[in-house]
Every structure is written in structure tokens, then in C-alpha cells.
Image 1 (cartoon, rainbow, N blue to C red):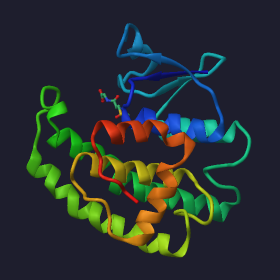
Image 2: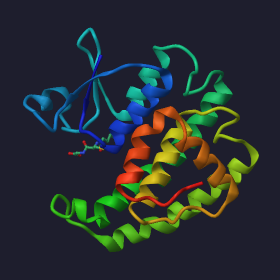
Image 3: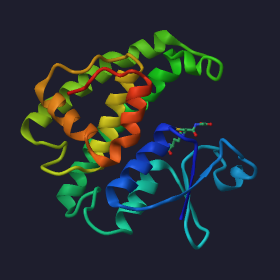
Length: 211
Ligand SMILES: N[C@@H](CCC(=O)N[C@@H](CS)C(=O)NCC(=O)O)C(=O)O
């Protein structure tokens, strides 16, 4: 299996973190070095894409995560029985739509790093913040009941939601939460072996401690 990447791209990182959690080693092809022919792999031109050993291609980071989860051994980060799968899907979607995607957008529209590549609308970015604050408060309430977003073990819902929170803090849209449940969860998340790359990013961006 070969994962087409751009280093540190958020949607690539979520796949690499899930793969690390599952103990899956992925060969990588860095298209920032050479993207010749990449549109034949993903007509949208986006990363990540996963090339399977039989030549089939999967795109969309969450779909790739699901493939890796279902074709490898436990722990199953998308859940086991129907109820658990639905809870995880529900919280993952909340994390993706309310934290992960808006966190990435916030950075694109505010950070100098993206100024040359994107027409930036900081006023639009500012509208994302109250929605993220509301979402984070809902996650904080949930995390008062359970150590991870769904129950007592890490799932893909934690990976997506935590990464979204990190983007917002890294880019300055949110300050680290004062809520104890978020701080305890963040401490557990950032300490995980799979999060080495996020710790490197946090250092690079001089991110304040989350726990
Ligand atoms: N829905 C896609 C989004 C992929 C995406 O936005 N990838 C970014 C990097 S994180 C990208 O390739 N951006 C360049 C572009 O959109 O042309 C997924 O989940 O994989």
C-alpha cells in the first residue's frame, strides 16, 4: 500500500495518525516533490490517496481511515457493534464539521503562511470561532461523562476532534480550553505515541500547552 501525501497536510496527518494507532506501516509518495500524473490518481488533485497492492485507489481521508481500520486487526477505531459504530460516526462527524474542517479553514484565512496561496478572508474566519467554541463546549460536556469521546477507549472520533481543536489553537482562533475535561483529554491525546507529528507541529507553531 502506498499513501500519496504532502507532508503535514491535515487530511494526510489524520490517516497517518490512525495508521500509527493501528500499527500499520505505510509506504509514502510525497507529491510535493513530484506530482506528475497525480490527477490520474485523484482527479481532484487532493491528498491523501491510498493505492492498494492490487492497484485500486481510495481517496477521502476518512474513507482511507475506515479501509485501514476494517482491513487490519483490533482495536477497531470505527467501532464494533452497531450502537458503538453509530455513536462514533455521530461524534466523528461533529468533530469533522465543527472543529477539523473549520480549524483548517481558519488557518487558511488568517495565517501568513497561506497568504500567497489563498485569497484570505479573516472576517469569514472569525465567524468560525463561536461555532467551534460551542462545539468544544459540547465535547467538554461529553468528556465529563467518558474519558474518550465515545466511551473508555480512543476512537476515530477522538482523532478527528482533537486534531480540529489543535488546528484552532495552533492558528490562534481558540485559546486552550479552561474546562478540566478538555484539558485531561488533551493531555491523554497529545501524549500518545501516534501523536509525535502533532507534538512536532505544536512545537513549530509554539502552541501553548493544552493540558
Ligand atoms: N475531503 C478530502 C479533503 C482533502 C484535502 O482537502 N486535502 C488537502 C490537504 S489537507 C489538499 O490536498 N489541498 C489541496 C487542494 O485542495 O488542491 C479528504 O478528506 O481527503
